[in-house]
Image (cartoon, rainbow, N blue to C red; front, side):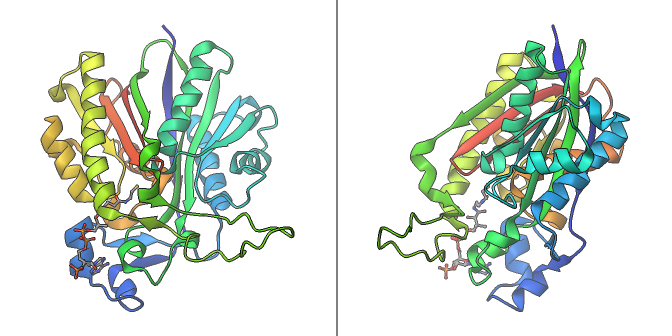
Length: 325
Ligand code: COA
């Protein structure tokens, strides 16, 4: 049976590094609090580049590493909650800049699960045979929708992009997936609200504070630990794979404590969970592909390894995939 194989990975981040001590200069927080509660030590923050710049840099890297010509790309999907514009999509901006003139390009929105949802869509197009290959990217400039006066959220997030070039394969690739949505919980994590103000009503056009990330941190924590564990266990069970057979888990890089709980409850040894939130923070849809790219670039994954990608995010949403590398 045809599967979808990850051929290459890539990432692109802003150069500017903001440490926990830098944040302690603008809000009432400390390096100790942030490290203890989240595992984050520093993050990349835009020095002026918007999300498209990071997405384009990632697309160039995955194509170069896969040694594929832009005109041979069939599909471009970008996941983001912080695009440059409402329209055009980031995917169309990427298409223009890399010269992928024959591709179909569109964005998906599933917050921090966005890369998983984008990869799942690409996988279906490839499995049906409609398209041969795809570039899938998660890209965010979260710094533009963060309230820099809110210590409960501004310490958590960072900017960046990561992605993969995928194509049809007969032997290895995406073997099992579990995506889910729980819209009834949407209010526990929101960002980017725009008001319906117009010339014929008296709604105020102001953006703050609803425009920024608003989060009930404890409820998100509870949701994440419950759903990610269920989702990982479901994928293992459906694939008939044991925790011992997993070489690596690449989880959404939100909080090291969430990862500790997932490791404990899923039975997959904690050392198999790859983390890099200490130097990038939570980059939403970019976090899983950025971590996967780091793992791959270090040469740690071997062909044939069983790898789990798993994430959760606003919506609320979650997504897990088991991949034979
Ligand atoms: N620095 C110092 N103190 C802070 C702080 C900061 N940056 N942010 C919050 N606090 C304070 C709170 O005001 C509170 O003080 P109080 O006890 O005097 O009222 C105290 O720390 C505890 O706050 P609480 O929110 O209960 O902390 P927590 O242990 O739940 O940790 C999170 C907060 C956000 C780190 C945690 O809830 C979390 O990680 N949730 C999941 C978030 C997530 O993953 N979001 C992304 C989804 S994709």
